[in-house]
Length: 206
Image 1: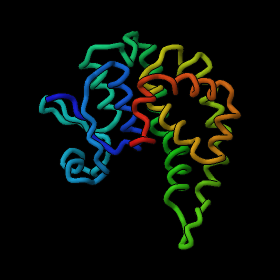
Image 2: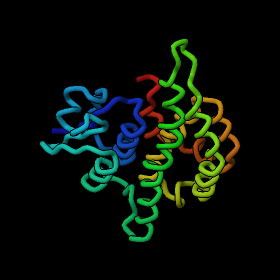
Image 3: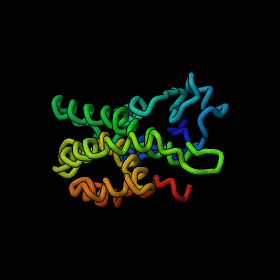
């Protein structure tokens, strides 16, 4: 069975694992399943995305899937072989999928999209809390990409986690302003947004 990546294309984590496959030129089938669909519930105990199937082997959680693809398939390594360089990539990938995702997507973007009152107005309680933390978070990311990629000068697994989140941040004014005010981070995003792996996994047309 060919590699199957399963999950709604607008999910940043689904996009991450698809980007890893694209970076390695791995042929795969994308099944655009929503969370809690019958297919997803058969693969993840909580019905969450992404999930993966390959040759009768099933896997869930974006980091596990991304590392499986990187290990099993040929193509450029998304995590360096040198232990210290690998540790840095893993460090930043973990930081992005926990702290950055939580602040920018869960407490900001998702609140804009889904937390509205009976009249359809955005409830800003969590948004206003989140944006108070933007200067520290965007400052940390700005410094971390100063060499051109997240934590270094080679595009890696960590970048595949960060790029979809930065894409989402720009959907709303405070996120766009924070990115535009971070010179290195803005240059980083604009450069890597041209990568085929990023362009081909865009959720806009999905």
